[in-house]
Image (spheres, helix red, strand yellow):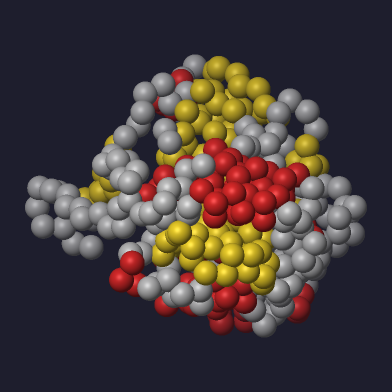
Length: 399
């Protein structure tokens, strides 16, 4: 069982067994399962890859004999996202312990459920080739120590020291010039296919009042540096609130606890008392019952006549019960701005929570500054809810 990011497309797959290469074909699920079982009974070594839920894939491999070596090669594609002028490439390498039932909530078979062993060591190496205009960019990784070599029009990225599958790989690419828009066109049969990517500039809505519900993960896995960073980020956030804003504060682990149980106007006295409450937060609340915590946060009255309502969620948790969490978020009439922290945050869950509700998802490694990221999310909350868009393609497009 292996992860890909939620926006990654698996384009091609090949398997090499003892020097012999086999290329995958796409088949209907039932036929693939029948062919796989038949090949096992015949003594062959079949490989069947299935798309599981939310960015997970299962590679089922049968009849590997002692001494045989097997290599699986994946070809994938994903769009590059630009945040504040920087492109971020994330390659997930870790399957961490998810909270909940992998079979009931995650849809996995018993033999597909990943088993995590904290003392297990698996080596990791990587080589990336950056082409064209991006090769001239500033490159750095907050997750690993890297060096970049120039080779013609390419930059080659390699690790400078031994690494292991204990954290996701992240590469930040900052172009010399802000790449505000790009387009790609390809042909298919008698048609043209177009893809346009752009970063719009919004008006400054710094004075727009907010109804903000802050929800902080205080489960045991957040202990230490993560909870300290969260407290520092929230303390800084308090300086950006004004008297027109309203705020609530909830922490959660195995259950949810409201530290500020109603949306309260952000007077100077209220901000001071909130900072005290933030300083007393600790990561000692057990597991990660995120669904119940979000439901408790939605339930805080906010009065729809007083504008929209946003949730700032800070968590390192990954849970199996993604579908139910996202479904309730969509019906809650809240925008969720999700901050995932740690070595392998729950990207699929947090990205879906944010995109399905009109919010933003940001994922941080342990070496990135959470305060800067939280303030970045906060500024996005101040901006408009909707964007009307029209593209002139030169003719009527078929979608």
